[in-house]
Image (cartoon, one colour):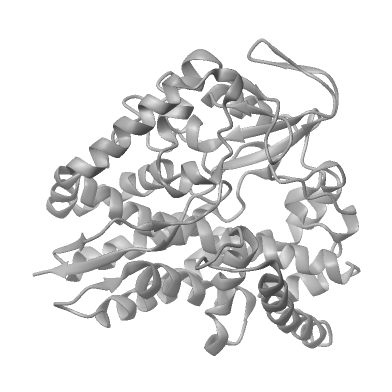
Length: 419
């Protein structure tokens, strides 16, 4: 860690431990953009692991920060609801009728029926078919990278691989593939001057244009026999073919965000972690078989989905705290993945960790990420192809992180291929 980074970490720690707990608001997006969130969550885990923030821009909310408490909440959908009509899945209230919601913001039985429609895309036999395609694309992306000059790894590698994958999953026009991760960014990033999106008006105009293309695809696919792509599955699925346009587009947005962000930000975060831990990079270069354990370690370390929210359907107790019916409960995956009581040496990036899947990044219970094996496969293949042809990729500057407390990700990261 260089001097500037060390000073930033020390300042963040001093501020976190000097701030009274009753003034804690760990949902402040600036903590994530500045990468100064860690001591705030560390203190909550130690001193107040189920913490009530009474006043924030998102209203009052409970923070659940311990690994076992997160699993307990995530696995109990009967008490802790994802229902869009009472708030949905993010700390930012997303109240809307169930008929207009994606399946991740539904409870059974509607959730289960809609999720079942798209599950064949992520079945083992589908992944087996996709693997050689992903490998050939990863190889081509890497072979076209510039040598001897600095370039943006997020744009040239992470976004390019995931946009190609999304275009395949939707059978979306390949030449327009870049608008798919752009859609995800429009949904997640807060408007700000010079940011991903500068105004709410710009966001709405761009989203209308992108989602209009999916309306056209629906109309085309529903008039044809079913095919093995996500739009056709939604158009012909027993639980989704009579969806409202808002419900269909809600599921499209969910699949774009989920299909883009876990992989995109984990690819970038993994390279950053290896550069921050050069001994681990050397270990990987000496033993490529460590990719197998490194992939879940990257996903734990990056925690690309920072939180998920639930709403209490009845009075409940978490970690000794009394939660009232209607309360907003936020599971901080970023904190659970650094919990010392569940994970050995959690603040170390260890590519040969004995139990690397001991993380909460994919969630638990009925909402466990349906595409997690595809995400892991893309990471594995990308690193297999990197190690075949590139000795080392060096991060040359501090990455630009997203202004979001929901997806913990990157806008840009400058790198250079070492000789």
